Amino acid sequence: MLRVCVCVSGGGTNLQAIMDAIDAGTITNAQIVRVISNNKGAYALERARGKGIDAVAVSPKDYEDRELFNEAFLQCVDEAKPDLIVLAGFLVVLPSVLIKKYEGHIINIHPALIPSFCGKGYYGLRVHEAALARGVKITGATVHFVDEGTDTGPIILQKAVEVLPGDTPEILQRRVMEQAEWVILPQAVNMIANGLV
Ligand code: GAR
Image (cartoon, protein in one colour):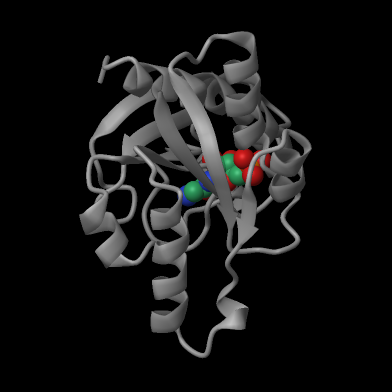
């Protein structure tokens, strides 16, 4: 059984997609052992607790400096003894010691087709604002392994989504989630849990 630790910052719809896929049996051989958020108020924590999953907040606000936060965050991850760390809308830069320690065992969902609209400053709604500003007709989502760069690690899965006339960033974000993110993130977890990556 793959021990999965999911890191979240906000609403947690991608976490929900993973929990639903485990319940539905479309993800096999995996269990979520801990959900960690940098944000105490993240609704994602409630989603996890509602399922009886251990859910913990480690907030930078509670630590004097970044180094102390990084240590606490790493300890919180280590305690879960994860085989896989899933960044599901996690908007904090991971400590490089954690990336090195778990290299090849961390994946991220990004709401665009990498290498478009990715890297520093491209997260959440900003990605969709940039896609609309550029006038692309196709966007999508990417699941990739995390390395020390920003959105630079090896790509596991991608799925394209149409941009439609009249789209706002919010409408496009929702379509990308529904048609791509909530599909390929659970799929990637299942592939890893079953030795297919
Ligand atoms: C998702 O769209 C995810 O792709 C994005 O944040 C959102 C979180 O939503 N992640 C990034 O932009 C990372 N660069 P959720 O909390 O409802 O899953």
